[in-house]
Length: 448
Image (cartoon, rainbow, N blue to C red; front, side, top):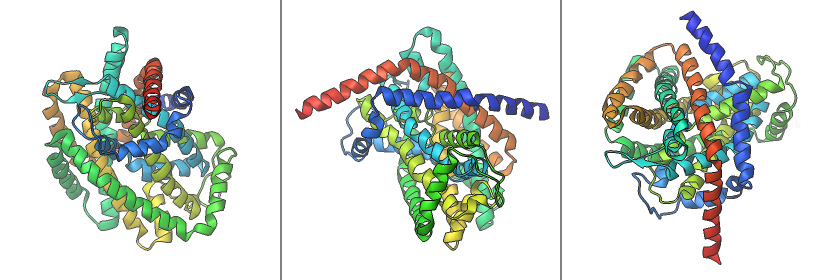
């Protein structure tokens, strides 16, 4: 087992190394510039479409619930534990690079959703299916077909790590440390709750996500604002620290070991991508099921996921850690976030534990759909029920086992999912640019 761990560690260092980070940021920047910064300029338009009552077109779920399903999968341990780990390893400057990742990632997420809706299919049960494997299959020539298979294979396996066992373990840890619940009990409860939701497929998943995600996100956001409000005098210096250490090394102090600028960039970008999943190709699987006839409309809604996940939720976590000074305490992960909240709010650690538990639960639901569609692409609709059974049975195992190896495997496969997706988005970028240009030309014509 040790040799396998060492081999995976080496592979992980390569797939999350400079080429991957340059690829994710580079493609996002290329798409952002190619559209004249449209995703940033049209952020308000995206929010207007999100809350629009009009739901025209074929699909299984509303555009709002499609976004909530993708957010269910993205807002999770990365926003609480991942941000804290990035700051622990890369210093306060890592938060700046998470922001930069989000700004270019909005263009990537937009392009993913546009391609997902434009190239989606209808399966044997009459449901709309899409995502990287389908826009590779239907948008590129046959010589690229292996890329779609590779994505589905990596995604199907990675889901059991990053979207299942790892999340179950995070819920179990949070509930045991704060409320004394045993890992075994948590695992069984998760198995029952997730199993009940999966019976109804994407419609039930999206309905649960549509209720839980906004509620918990707002609750966590408000709690974070309270933390920042109680430390308002320190906020300007905290922001200055973040910008300073984004470009200059940070010396060791307190329990912080010090970090070079490269560490701030690497961990900021890597944890940012891990959190908002822009470029990984997971979110477009949910957006392909949206009730819409216009790929661009769904793309404008989809890009909000990156903004909400990183610019809003991750910023709350990161700013709370820096403004309270807890970043130099030597704590890391969820414990560091809990320390920051408890320094400002009595019982703040309970807020963090509850948020982590709910976010991880919704991540399990969101990723169940992603994994299911990857497996369906490979083996057909007959594989859906066996997949759901396996997914539910894996939860108590994840809740009760040590998962260092699973974390490593899932993180590595996450990066390997991104490779086929990034290649496909680069090749399909002319389609994205054309559809975008046509959509806004029609909008301008309609107004004149």
